[in-house]
Length: 226
Image (tube, rainbow, N blue to C red; front, side, top):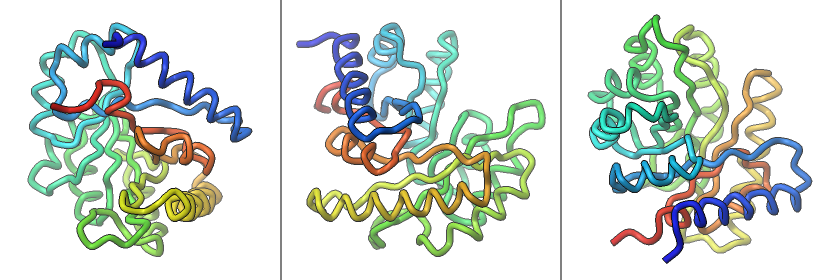
């Protein structure tokens, strides 16, 4: 069984290789997806050098925040945000990657404290129009971006997407390419935009080839879930 450090180094090397192959000038950041993982497992990966962690559920993440407060980690919410969890999400997280509707924008801005740095947000895009998946449609990005830009307590950083997992590599490439185009258009309108979050353990190298600069990796870092 490989160690957390070995797994982290292996993923970082694959990211570096994919970045080089893509001719990408931007640094590609690694987000460790730690949902269902124990405090001990997160602490071990943090000891190996990983600082940014992604959680799907606010309640689960809050307990980990408290247990790991001494590590000063960077926390991302990557799961669907329910309106009744917006207050806690706004104060607990450094990033919310799953912004997809007006009500969430308003709630996060209202509950983010003036004593905190602006909350970094990504617009989640349902790039394949899946009925069971959260996220706005591509044609809704501009309107949501404009609403976020009006909120002083929020900072629009870019886009996030999860292509249909049932698609083959060729179909995923089309989805990734569409997201890259949407990201470039958004960046033209908002120069501070700098993050395209897409790609997971099974497809992050392909995502990097299509412009992803933040990849969300769970299994390759922590191993298969029991």
